[in-house]
Length: 202
Image (cartoon, rainbow, N blue to C red; front, side, top):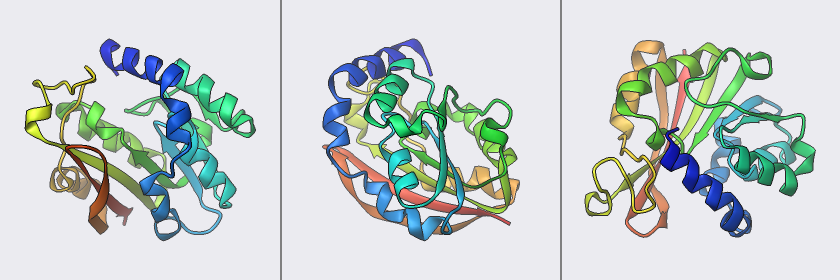
């Protein structure tokens, strides 16, 4: 994550994360469909800890990584029960966080901050921590081109639209098949539509 994007999330942690905590994550409605009961799940880019806390509350053995110090601080303030379940980390994954061997990986609102040329390595690192038949649940935004300035959004964050088809083309050679695709997800921000993709490692 580059400095401008890091700076945005530091400011967001201080001023916007509390409001975000008050709303349900759109992707959380897919957790039971994506992962078996009690599955060990890694939340990549856990942010304020909202989804990670929901996963734990619903009985999943969930862990998270988050690169931004301020966001991790907010996550632990809001959800102190996550203290042993959240650590620094980002894509591509370094080593096997929390021992690896995950049944599933959640990657919500993260891939747009990964440069296109780095997506293959990011996906390889996700594959490396999954068990056979492990699943990856991903949310991908598609922001209107007029709201982007090159590879920056209006908040100055690094932002690239990666289509579900592109992600599928990267994951297929790694042994993944696409289980489902929901492109009817409600837009969380004006001008942005979200796709929810579920992949399984064969």
